[in-house]
Length: 94
Image (cartoon, rainbow, N blue to C red; front, top):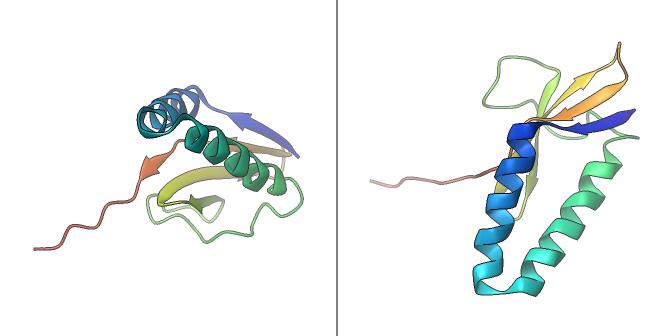
């Protein structure tokens, strides 16, 4: 399977890495490297993560990494995995 990073994902990832780098540049580098390993593992196990809570589609899954959610779509016909975006999961307590 081929992994494709959408424009939205790449832009959001750039913002996330910039935010992390403000505190510690090496942490941003480590974050990116470890995230890339998880994403590359999707080639062999595209359904290893749970169905997305954001989309009503069994082919869209949520990869989680250090408090961030990375939804991705598996297209078996095209043999592609499209990384849709990345966002910080926030719990609101009242």
